[in-house]
Amino acid sequence: MTNRLRLGVNIDHVATIRNARGGAHPDPLRAAEAAARAGADGITAHLREDRRHITDADIDRLMARIALPLNLEMAATPEMLAIALAHRPHAACIVPEKREERTTEGGLDAAGQFDALRPFVEQLTAAGIRVSLFIEPSERQIDAALRLAAPVIEFHTGRFADASGDERATELKRIADAIALAAKNGIETHAGHGLTFDNVAPIAAIPQLAELNIGHFLIGEAIFTGLEASVARMRSLMDAAR
Ligand code: PXP
Image (cartoon, rainbow, N blue to C red; front, side, top):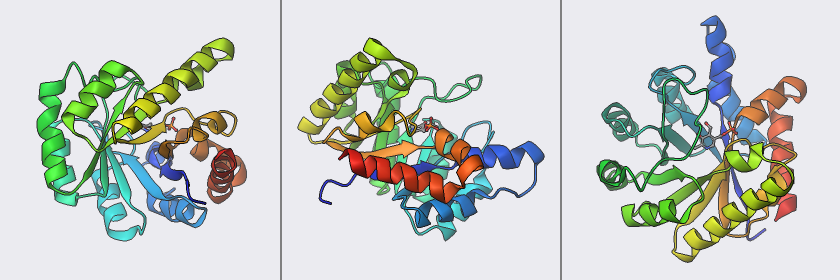
């Protein structure tokens, strides 16, 4: 397949379950290995400021032991920058982070925080880390991402995932138009948030898209079918949509 869409599996919520009991099981590293066997192209992990799921020790072990590239999701803070520079993961996705949120609720305000973000993009890039900015599919944010010279944009698909009917069609068009605009400007495009077996196909069918990052649904589904089966089914739905 020439236009293969990469799948990054986000393993944060394996750590959420582990942390509910404070022990070592289930192990996110084992989940990363299972995802790799089932056709994942990368592993994504979000080291949050409050360490509610992935921990510093998880990042150490993932960096040392997984064969797949690691995409570290991180807030633009000096602490996270220092961690990323110390580990040099394949990629770093800069996300907005609020302590009180349950998940990453919206995209980064790359336009409003342009000056604050610039040194993060520059230092991560200088360290050889592929930087992506997690933004909403809006022209204003794409324009800021282009000016920040990040090589990758990840578009937030949460509104699409939450919508239904005509509203979902409108959100899908917004995402497809944003991806086309970013790709026309030479930027690699990724997407993620809230994607499931039922809603992934129209997003995966967007031809310029290079990667999806999917977590919560896959880990939840793994309770019923096992993680390898869950990842393999997502992989085949993505392939079928191309
Ligand atoms: N991409 C980014 C940048 C994210 O922050 C998240 C959620 O942590 C995801 C993808 C995956 O979202 P979900 O867990 O809803 O599949």
